[in-house]
Amino acid sequence: MKDKKSLLNGLDEIREAMQEAQKQYNSDADKFWNELPYEQKLMAFHSVCKRIWQGDVIDEGSYRYVLYHVFGFGMDSYAVGMGCHYMDLHNLIITGMEHDEYIKGVKKFYDKDNTN
Image (cartoon, rainbow, N blue to C red; front, side):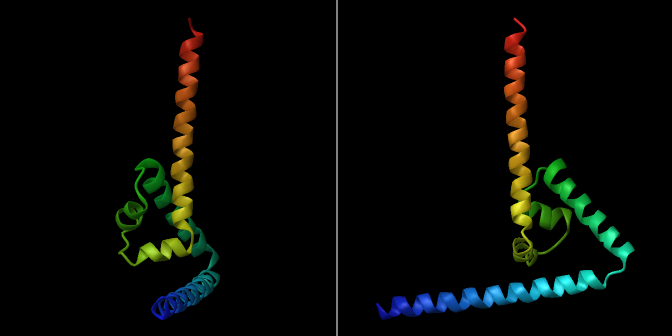
């Protein structure tokens, strides 16, 4: 029982350290963004959105595909993307596209059925 409690305490410490690291990364990213001139912010916004559109909508790539192949990042980007909720955004885009395809299929079915 003591080993189990020790393990759980260790996991809590790791979780707290990860949360603190994420807070620091968010703070550093906000500082970076706030120090960019307006034109560079627009360029960064355009570049990121263009790549998300390409990877998620056009290529219908996985989370890793978009990070590694479209953005050209390394494996360290996986946690960064999770920390800024890109994985959530990616999943919302993919789910929305799947839902849209489902609705299109239903409409085609009913349109075809109503032509008789």
